[in-house]
Length: 178
Image 1: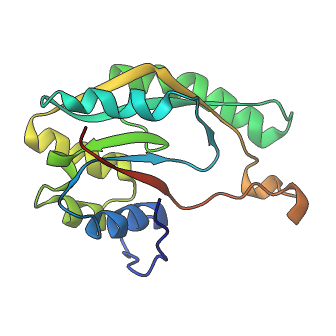
Image 2 (image 1 turned 180 degrees about the vertical axis):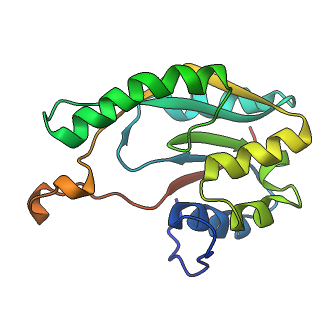
């Protein structure tokens, strides 16, 4: 695991997308896949293996799961996120949409010449990755086993520093090919 300080912020991209772009720019040529997970996503023991494994198929450029908001804390924000999610997940599945909270990119996607330029001009990592994947004619593999619980309290509902959930802009693992 490597930690980088974000110093390449694009005015057209989110902080997370800028962070992913900066990290990818620093990768060596030996890296065959990257995995991205949101800090408030609760992953299971086999998450990383299940996320990366489909990328061994050269026809697949992206592997993704989806989120399921945990509305255990009965707050207005959590209830709204929960209801939104109930409508969004089926649509994302049928439209073959990636989710940046649990996302793996194959080498051909993130090393494509247009990738870094695309990431500098897109608000979300999902959109940028999907754009390059489609240019390459690659498939997306959506995994049901990668439906991840996402916990955390929306920022407006944080009442004190003790109740705040820390959300890092990006956490990424860099893997070598097996």
